[in-house]
Length: 548
Image (tube, rainbow, N blue to C red; front, side, top):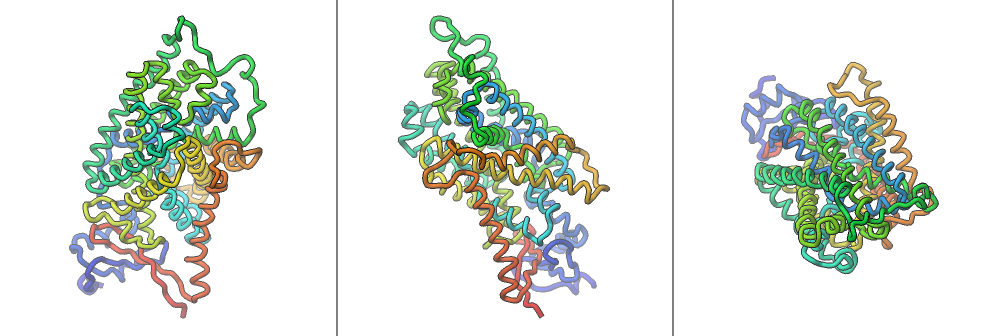
């Protein structure tokens, strides 16, 4: 069939019929408002290239990718969760550092797991693509469930809360006011979230520039933080030139009486949360230049930087803070540490504001990554208003996807109480669900290797590391149900693992109702076609076709 015979008048978009999963029916290609060159490219490239490329193009190099990794990994976690991890370890030093050590090993194993999958499937979407490539039966179950879950939980509440708390503490408000008596920190965080949404939504170029600038400042901050541990170990002295009381003594070094399986699991989950971010950069793989080479350099380098920073700060915590100070500090533990080290002016104000800057920089990266994940999910067309939510109009940036992330985050910030328990609860809930999906990805890589032995990635994960992730993830998924759940609860919500499971179950039910029950009851099949929007983005659109 000639190209002229394919012409058909369409006002807003081109459409390419597909079978709902793969393969483009070129006979049904209809020219619309785009040039013949663009349409010819579509005919030549086929559906796979359409999935890999986005209108923004590939504009992220090695430095930008390192900034994305480091800014995403080193956020609020290391300054806010160590106190809770310490409490969940029963104040035991051996368990405390053991948890951090295992979390670091798991992060490196997970990084290479994602690097291998990322080489095999080098396009934006990250774990969404990895899960879809393996768990393709029942039809669309994994795709719809994970896409719906991603959009519903596409928020960055924890970093917004920490930004608000550290900003207020640096301005001179007391610890009790910041942690318990006011929700001002939530509102400050919400204001920053919407500001970031506006910046990224108006201009990709300016958003990336500001993100890289803040990321460079964060790298400098990380260097300063890393030297803090050296200073605390070698030079810090209390009044009278006496060494400070350590949060550990001969009595509690081997005391495991207050530790349960549930509390230890929560500690693992929170420590692993501090390394979270090694998996999120794959959500923007379609915007990275030479993604395989870039990931090979940026991924391990970023984790090593984060690990050195974390080791230094944890040594400083146990060297400088007393047992009670460490236990009662909550999310402000980082600020309290620097106040003791450098005094009220330099420690409380300057360094605390620097930590707030770190959380703010993390918000730029998290919201950027989440918006791209949301955009990839909306491109599949499963959810209402998907065409609008996936678009890059009016300024060439995914503003609707950014707004979705920003509004969900703001809603959580308004509803949640101001206490440190709210922060710990959200960290645990988010990390628990991520652990469940990480388990599926790790098992999926084993299945993918056996299913496609001819496909060998340039970067390969260690089989020992993959099985290590599977075993530890199984423990972290089951562990919270063993023993009494004392920490990380909010009175009006169920325990964090129950909340995570309920959200996943609701997303599963959405797939079951829309793609199985309703078509069966009403007697139709759901079909999909590719739509090329006015901004050049290719999306799917689903329609009902009556059974004959």
